[in-house]
Figure 1: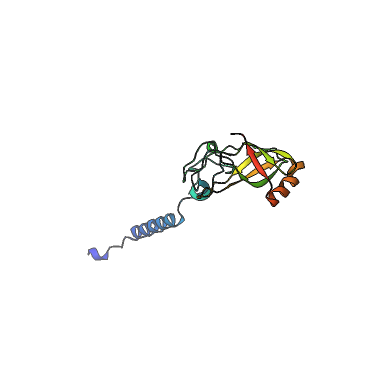
Figure 2: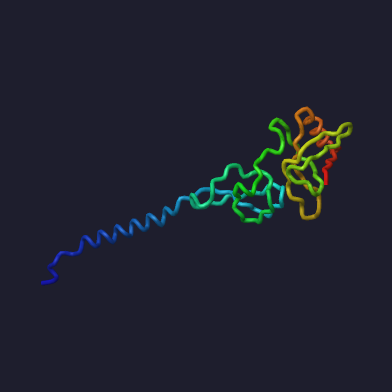
Length: 167
């Protein structure tokens, strides 16, 4: 009379519960957060191009502002950690930055002189973009004092500014 015994309802409920919990864990996945990674090779002194990737929460140390000049050359795909970026301000906070053509060898933090038509203005390079592949001009940002910002911007607009840096 074995066929008159009760079916194993407890085992069936336990099996369904295990499948439901496993499905829920598989669908939710681990908790992730966006984190900055270097998108392209970056030379020392250049500001790295950042791409954001999702990584598990707590995998990498927390990172504030991912912008600033690189302290060392950085390979593409490297996660940005605070030791790779110089976060110290390169210019006083009230200075203005203008985009200009930079000579080769200019890196963030380099002192610069901007030769306008009738005056010389002191500044500091605060950001450098990579040069194009044909050896053309490198663009970058040079910060200048507020009292000279308008004159520098006007000279840049007319193309009559020359940037000098110390080798």
